[in-house]
Length: 329
Ligand code: BDR
Ligand code: CA
Image (cartoon, rainbow, N blue to C red):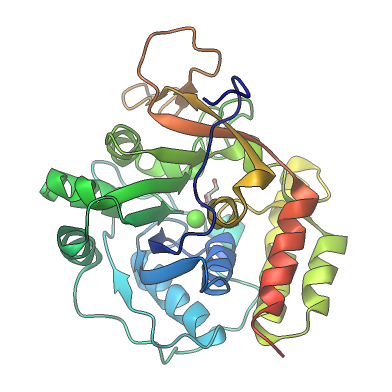
């Protein structure tokens, strides 16, 4: 915490071009996170996209990630397929939210962006082994199975990790897939436990903050008005995403979870964070996947995450609209 006191932390992410690996399970909101990252070549160098089983099975998440690269004109971006199931548990499907394709809202096509031959975990391990100390940021927006497996295989790779910016967990908000747990952590709580306790800086975007960035009809219309193919695909996917979540939450729009990770890297000033301990429940049948965030520092457990608790939602959507316009017409 800096001199501004609890609730704030000095973040030195401005004016640096960060090397990032996006580890995702598209998913409409993962897809928007990919677009946002690709729209920021001055700030982010996307080294690769690794995919994992999560919202839908791996054969769909890897295909969906490649489709997004095609739509964004980035058929050069290497996309890898990773773990097809969680470390210890069985997969939990989420087609009822994301549609059978995982990215319902856009028409599915066979992408030109190739799938790399190398498995995602091998790619993560090799890339981090070759990277200089503290130079690569990992952005998991799905279950954290790939990253946890890479860490298990060679813990020394963590030296190369500058930071992990994850979407997962919930504190003040209840769970979204069980009463206590957020989907990404619930699917693979053992992997999340490894990642949150890996010893490198972690910024955690949980439901407390993602439920503040709702894709209202007005915001989706602003995105569509940008008028290029990437913005149109984003608006189409969000219009679908809308249907289930607005009914579930009785809200005006769906939470746009995963892009919060990339948005924080681009504009940390839009978010408020606090260093806390986050511990994952890995045993209880009732509260499996719960993230116990010690927000008020009532224990002496070590501070292992920067927990995000507030966001300027208008600023977030302004950023998204501005960046989607970067793709041109
Ligand atoms: C998370 O679960 C998935 O449904 C979304 O893609 C997001 O990563 C939200 O709980
Ligand atoms: Ca996701």
